Length: 217
Image (cartoon, rainbow, N blue to C red; front, side, top):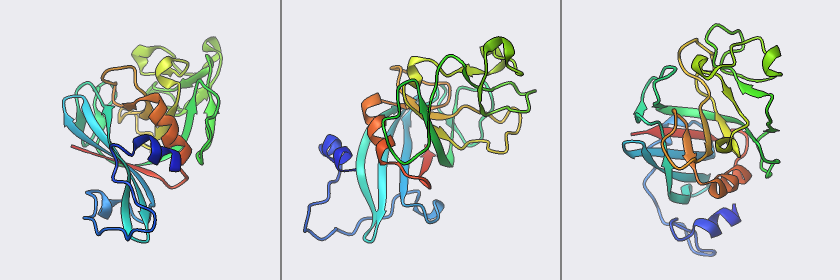
């Protein structure tokens, strides 16, 4: 967390050692995150752009660790309920379940999977493993591996590092899947949240089980 503060101090409200924490208004998500102590806030600023703020709950209340991180969201913005193929980022509060990436584990508190050509996110709505990570040779997979079916091969530059958002955990066919916080490709996403890879790595090192992401317009 200290390194994250150092990197982003110019944009953040930094705590001064030995100084009393100034009272601050509760962030917009405060009443929706239960007992969580780490929250990533993503708020749309128009079109496919958003700003990301990172918060830690302390004895003094919610404290910003970093603010104003530029982020990309879905090409068509946000929606309270998303469906496969809509190119929109879901609004709400979601768990951050585990991390993955094509690069080795950078460290952090979340489980991490290093992925390669045989790692997929199953988007086939007819598959019993819809909206889960699967490992199989393409010709041996028991689901439709085509992009037209919604399935993604995870061995791509945008997944250099990624954190899985717990969207549609019930895996209801058509209600969307493969929502991540991942490395930006420099433009809008298909519904994920994307930021600079260096900042994402710092976030991953800071995150612990129980962290949440809150997304709103």
